Amino acid sequence: IVFSIVFSKLYIVFSKLYIVFSIVFSKLYIVFSIVFSIVFSKLYIVFSKLYIVFSIVFSKLYIVFSIVFSKLYIVFSIVFSKLYIVFSIVFSIVFSKLYIVFSKLIYCVLYSVL
Image 1 (cartoon, rainbow, N blue to C red):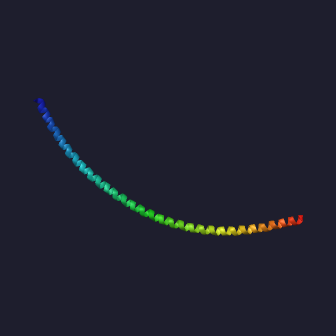
Image 2 (image 1 turned 90 degrees about the horizontal axis):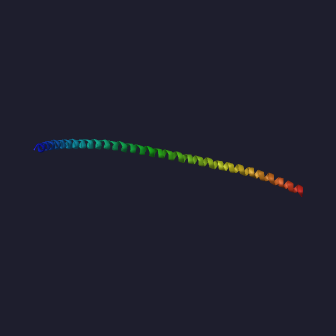
Image 3 (image 1 turned 135 degrees about the horizontal axis):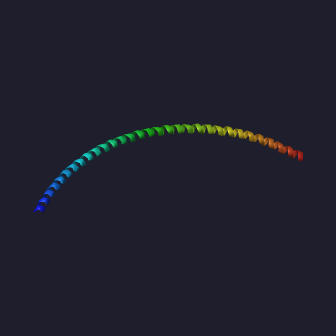
């Protein structure tokens, strides 16, 4: 009988504790769920805005760099084509002079031998 009374009292205490803990944990779960939901939604908004800003900035940078590099390409192609023309003319003149000098030299050598 004593054990029965003690166990019944213990059962009542533990069931009340279980009810209290279950209420407390359910409230905590609700609170944490709301807090996390708010925090993550705010974070999502912040990161989506950052993504939009970065995408705009990088697209502008891409446009600027593509324009700059295309202009640089045009300038370098013009410069190198001019340089090619100048060097080809210079080499042509130099080699034609060398040809004339060597042909005269060969003519002189052949004339002196014959």
